[in-house]
Each structure stands twice: as C-alpha cells, then as structure tokens.
Image 1 (tube, rainbow, N blue to C red):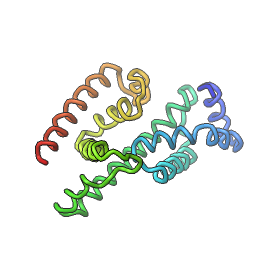
Image 2 (spheres, helix red, strand yellow):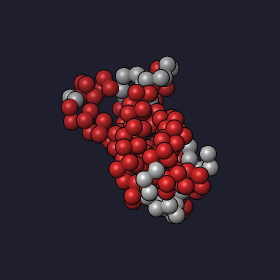
Image 3 (cartoon, rainbow, N blue to C red):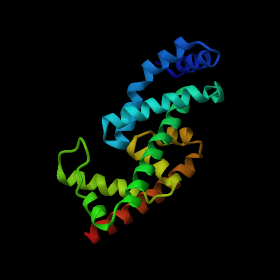
Length: 186
C-alpha cells in the first residue's frame, strides 16, 4: 500500500473512521513485528512491542500531521518503543545482576541464532549499543539494524542527512572500540 493511501487512512481515522484504523493495523502490523524482532530477537516480545505501538498511535492520533507520511510517523514511534525496551532491559540487567551473573550473560544464547560465535557477537553488540548515546543508538539502529536508507533514516529521525552521517560514523567508531575492548577483556 502506498504512503498516500496510508496517510488518507490515518486522516480518516483522525476524524473518527474506525474502519481505517483496522485497515492500517492489518496492513502495517507485520512490518512492525519484523522490525521489533530485529531489535529483540524474540517473536513474542516483537508482537508485544508492535501492539504497544498501535496503542500509542490510537492514543496520540490527534497529534499526527497529515502533511507528513503516516508510515514515517508510525515507524518513528515504533523505533522509539523498541529502543526504550532495549534500554529498560539493559538497565534492569545491569542493576539486578552481580558480576558473576553479568559475565554469564555473555554466554546466554540470543534466541533464533544457532551459531555460538554469532550468539556471542550479538550479545556483545547489544551490550555495546547500550553504551552509545541516545542519538548514536537511534541512528545506528535505524541504518545498520533496520537497514533503512540513510536519507530516509535522516528524514524519519528528523535530522539533517549530514548530521546522520556524522553521528553514524562516530557511533560505528565507538561501537568498534567498545567491542574490541570487550574482546580483549575476555
């Protein structure tokens, strides 16, 4: 479904057409779940995050500006929910686990990944992402995790393309340094 039709449906929902909301949900839930899965590596959590996004959309539809593409607005809300979920999960792990448990975390498999080397890499990557600034994490996730085109990502995040490129460069550089330090510490 093209962006113009989605925007028309969202505008209709703003004026009270409940059928348009159902059509939006039916059309866009699968891509939301797929995106959340790329963040969480857990299908159940991905479905929960997608449902939470639709609740947020329902609660804030009056703030949607029909001059902008609905898909971009929706995915920005969803991306922020996914990042908040990751942030909460890492904060909870860091505050509730002692050193032995934290070291055990690096050997915990990431769901859906069967290769032990990849499991280890994903665990280190997610821990390292937790050490990035919010802007660096948003840009890195948008471009490298979600694999969004850089120009589109800049538009979705509401930043200049040059800012996105610079932030992405420093996020990748910092991640590489953190990952290297993690590997050396093992």
